[in-house]
Amino acid sequence: MNSRKFLLKITEKWPAKVISVAAALIISVFYRLNTLDSRIITVPLRVEASSNFIPTHSLSNSARITMRGEANNITTITEEDIEAFIDLNRYTKAGTHRVPIQIRKRGNALGVEPLEISVSPAEIYITLEEKISRFIHVFPVFYGTTAPGFELTNLSIIPESVIAEGPRSSLENLKEFTTAPIDIEGRSSNFTMLVNINNDKPDITIQGNRMVEFNGTISRIERLAPIVFTETYEAEKEKEEE
Image 1 (cartoon, one colour):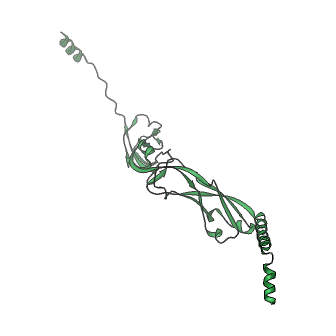
Image 2 (tube, helix red, strand yellow):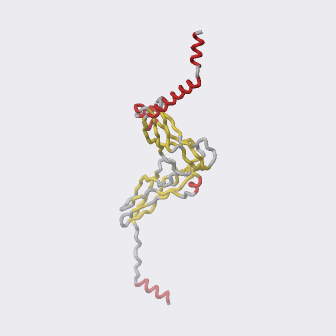
């Protein structure tokens, strides 16, 4: 009998009791959220791309991360503990796609509760195009002049061409690469040097270390001896005219 009365007492006006408990939980959650601290960090934005497609324009290299949690927890989280990335592997067709920026927690960010993480921007528009690669010739660029009486008579570049890869539309229109300016000012002897390859297109990458070996041959200018008109020569010329 006592048990029955106890159950009746518990279930009496149960909808109101459930609502009260739910309201109390909601208030508790909101109170806890309102007492959380915020912290903003900037982390590198990594691109996970397939081997077949590539963005046609350069992307932002960072993302803005906002963390909300207890102060003593979020202050221990560093830029190395939050990874921001976009996953392009799931896109199998060229075109423009709206791609979300995703987050991975690592290190000190693992197991931290409560912890809210939001990223800005939340998503970006990316135009994907077929990725190709081809050989592109490298041509030297010079500045300065050789020493008086000397000239650059021969040159070679090793390698003469390099492999570049990028979006089809960009790479098919690329005719050549040039080197960083090679200083020949005052030179009077042969020389060899490593020189960087210029590449002002952010959507195109050069395989390898982006350097070539330049070999230059500097020779003395050989001046031709002047022609001397002798009397004999003049006499022979007059006879020919007669």
